[in-house]
Length: 296
Image (cartoon, rainbow, N blue to C red):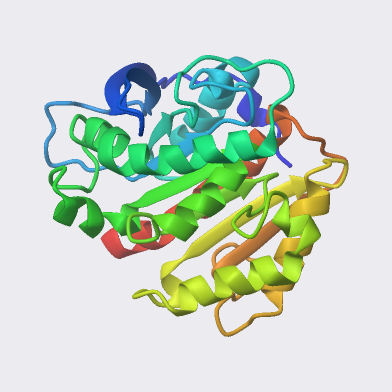
């Protein structure tokens, strides 16, 4: 993989914080925040310019600052956009925890996934309107109709538990997102770590979900990755291998410009942000490539 994206570039974007309010099922009102990366050249007064948007989730125990604290992702984004390898996009760093603070100590898998499931409602009802009502995305407004209409310009990805969150977004919110980037995290919809314990059933579940949706298989794009020395490979790799067999829905290709299922198994990489942000660097030029071609 290329390494020059570690270096600073002359054209730097900015990080802003968006604060929004959510209400828990128990009726507790929470103030949360997400960090938002705006690429170089973003101009709030330029109403004609629209940006694709990527929501990027941290792993277990993290918070909205995790990606920015743990790896030079901002430098990578700026290098990719400044060299025009990928079209500049807005990147949002939220948290699936009810309180946006780092968690420490042992975390029960069911507790983690319950936070993820709560986040899905927050994502649609609070976070997306807060972000896309403020910045120039392809959503003309924050009405349900306009948010749905911008599906093709919206992606969700994440690392580790954020990868599991990504599969949950695909499962529960496919009408809002068209691109999914699960990094070192498998699908937990059948059961926690279902990609390892029930890879065939998990793959079939995802197959049936997409096949029975109102969208065609080519309206879903999955960019998955992990490392050979990453423990998460034991869960994600079997799931992806089973998905490859279901060829009426999943069109696997090593060429990221073709097909709708891609899988990068990076030799020697471990379970760390420094690895997964390189996976992102690999995928970013292709994430919205179809949108880019349509606009050219």
